[in-house]
Length: 262
Image 1 (tube, helix red, strand yellow):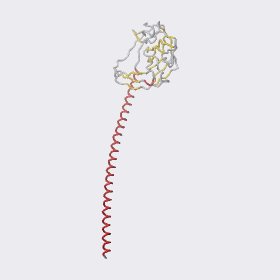
Image 2 (image 1 turned 60 degrees about the horizontal axis):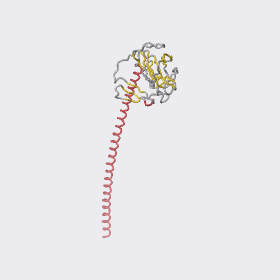
Image 3 (image 1 turned 180 degrees about the horizontal axis):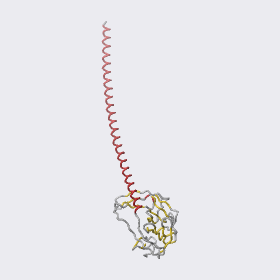
């Protein structure tokens, strides 16, 4: 009988001990679960913060990119307007050597002026505004990167044209939008470098003079009207690298590379 009572007490004691141990284990599991929940919430908050910060930067960069794109489009539009509206007025020119020229241009402010600079290498060209406060890259498409090197340039019918140069001594090319397109018409004489060009007759024609090709130093001039070239007068001196401009309504060049003559 005593043995039976002892057994019952032992069973109840063991049951109570297991219950306490189980409660302790459950409490531990609940505590660990709470810690995991806290860690999960922290990770979630960190993820949301990281996403918001980086997504905000991406949105800001995209906004800046769009603003720059709009600015470039505005500058390109102003360049196109400048190329279409800027012209040089000139009076009649004869093939006998007597020339009378005048130039007129509307007043502009530095902020309104945009200068296209086509460099030795076309892919390094840029747009510079008149007051020098900004400069942006200008993509010029050309048959080769040094296509405009040593070429002379002038406006004809509101379009920029280039003449001769290092890549082709007799070429004539026109700038359409941002592409230099070579024309079928050619210069009558090779003009590798040192030559000059000038818009005449209200910008309808260009006068191209002087230059150097191999051992030949040019004194001659020719006139381009947009479709044909005609040889005209020649100077007494070579005026290579002397440039070409207007003085008292006459085409004028001063000095040259190897002779101090006017």
